[in-house]
Length: 597
Image (tube, rainbow, N blue to C red):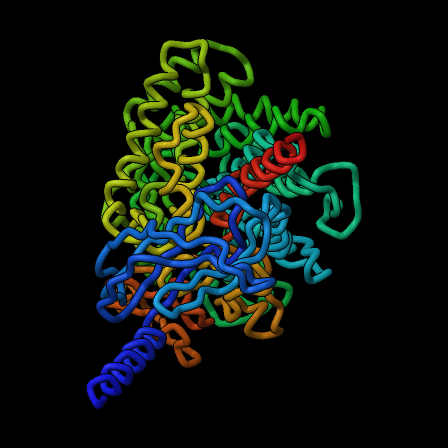
């Protein structure tokens, strides 16, 4: 009898131990009916898991008992991890998973779980607007700015008001802004029916007959014109890291660069830049000029329906910008001043490829196609793919959409080669992540979530081009990672889903000073512990709610003091617009298919 009691007590103790040290991570937004559906069971104990159950949250009925469990061993803070595959279950409803006495959060299975998510991102883009800011109902940085690095016109005034603030600081970069503009235009070009019209061109609530994502892209294009007023005259950034002077709202920005409220505007010179101790490693103009060209080219194609004269103007500017990009081959990096941190972009052939490929799409000129293929063949895969680390924004943009444009040209001999290049890059990510339960093959460098968005974009485009399901499970895992199927169990997009665990304490003046939430913003994401431990000025303001999930490998904090993991970024947010709108389109197709059956 004592033996039975002892064994019973031992079982209770073991179950309690597991329940306190194990978790089931799921996509909090939910799963579409016909999608890959995998959760991750993670434990700080040695657990032997062989089965799990899917429970109907409405009536507590067991809907599925499954042995589709794959063991993956140690990862990050966990001693054992398992993938729980319930893809076979497609019935609409609200559910949760159980395994070893552990319950997951509730989640929905429905074709509509991604409806409106791409438009939701635009909340953050509008909040980031410079000049007139519709969120604050006020204007900021209206006196930008004065030219630097131009001996013939040094300190002269130039009107560059507009665009977006880069992140939670108020610097503005051509690098990220042009990419964000292109990404939103691309999302609309690919999925035009998934975007609503609920705001006007100024970002105020009011329908104006134009999809909101077009309004936002047009805001970016208007600023790009100011940053490229004439042939061979291009500006790369407004302000520098002297901006990092404490929390303040943009309409109360008091940082003085020596000319009142004017801020420095850096001319693209093709030479190293930096007005003080620290210098970048600029070697030419191609990367920045190429970004101007691709944004103008795609903009001229997409906006001709709404702004025909404007479309003609930027069509001509696209041709000029691409010509200038070839005049001084090399990369333009952003400039720093008081610290050694800047965007260390080292590649430019991807920018030249995208510009040439987009111009070919617009014009049908075979010379552009020839040059796009030549540039694209220099860099078959975006270099961060498959690497363990990279410098900050070293390989940017993080996805090469030029490869997609060339791969989608089925009437030329090069499309097969560029499909192979897309596959090769995805293979590198897959092979790096195939041995962990999250199938996570992206390096935990600064802005890792932006790289996840890039990988998702490439995976989706590859599957659409080829019909291949080769990377379907990896794509689903990276998608789910952004919505909570990660070691911390949190979404990486502010207030998405609103009833889930998401970044509530972002590194943002809007939040810290006024409790204005950065709704829709994709935060930087987790970084290697070794990166976190060496960055300047990092300190946690509050107790770490995720401390039991931190590890020697990787760190994430929902804390406004951690600018390395919890700061929303404008370009990362914009870069998700294509992927999320694609999921909404797929969901509508699923719903229609079900209705017709």
